[in-house]
Amino acid sequence: MESMNISLPGRLKQFVDGQIAQGRYSSASEYVRELIRADEKCKAEEQLEAKLLEGLNSPESELTAEDWKAIRSEALARVQARDKAKR
Image (cartoon, rainbow, N blue to C red; front, top):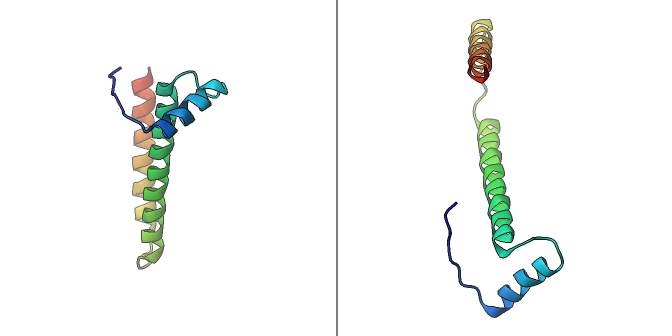
């Protein structure tokens, strides 16, 4: 694991120390990692929402039976490849 040094104003350092003192986190590093994970999740949710809105706002297209067959075949191939890799 790599390390990173950060500087905080006294008020923020006291807040982090308070979180640790309350037993919510075992160290400042654990607290910062949790904040970063939460930010990653938030960004991923924002990207998903943007893609969903893009899809909702795009013109409709009809999928043919052949399209569905191709999608199903590709999905099954991926599942089989994943299962094979696990063995």
